[in-house]
Image (tube, rainbow, N blue to C red; front, top):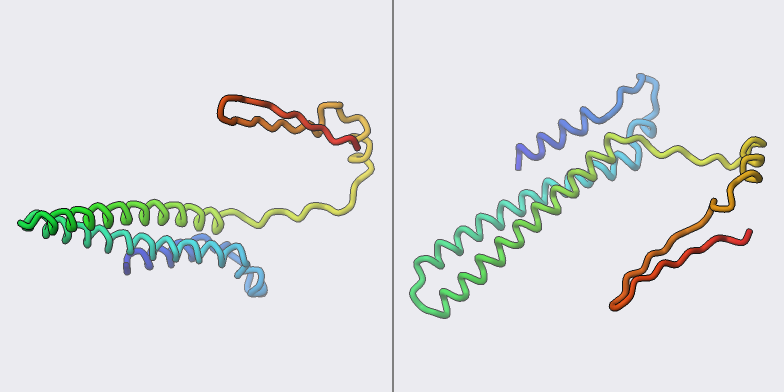
Length: 154
């Protein structure tokens, strides 16, 4: 767990962009970075839980090998497979959370769209092709495959 937390702290330090000394704290600590750190923390917790569940599965398997009663054998086998599946799911979620956290830390904030429409944009919209704005909706249902095409009227 300490290794995971050390890696998390290193990722936060590396991913934080260098700012000037007079930069405000709100420019350094953004909501996007906070969510990225939260995802990395959740990834560390899920990875640790996966290792704990894997250790429990190993313990139940050892008890399964030494069991003599049929009911106890079945119970230990079920517990072993249960913990093993849960550990694998935990590791998969940890990987997904980790990738998402790193992505949020490394990528910048999306640009705000302009609220003002330039004259060039208005002219290009008038000359736009009739195909502009067409949306395709493929649908797969039992026994049929369909395609719906929509185009706004205005």
